[in-house]
Image 1 (cartoon, rainbow, N blue to C red):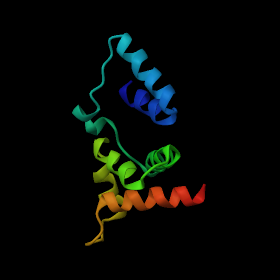
Image 2: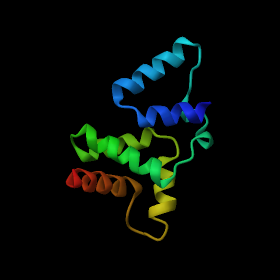
Image 3: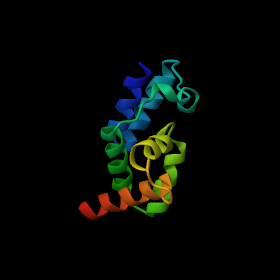
Image 4: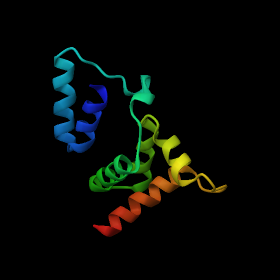
Length: 106
């Protein structure tokens, strides 16, 4: 149920995501996302959706990328998937670059 809820929130716009979270809290269901990171496994589709959502917000790409630090398992996913053989690039740099690329595509 937790993974389904998180997927719903990822797919939703900000207002809709806040409504879903409030709805779950009103039912007495509280999720501490950072407490159980193995319940949320990142994959390329979820990563691309997250990047798209961040780019859609607009603003400073560095600040948008910094929000990745609050997402359980995201930095590790980027490190293992995209930077496995990179000695100089950091996950935050890669995320910022991906957000910038998404903004250019819009």
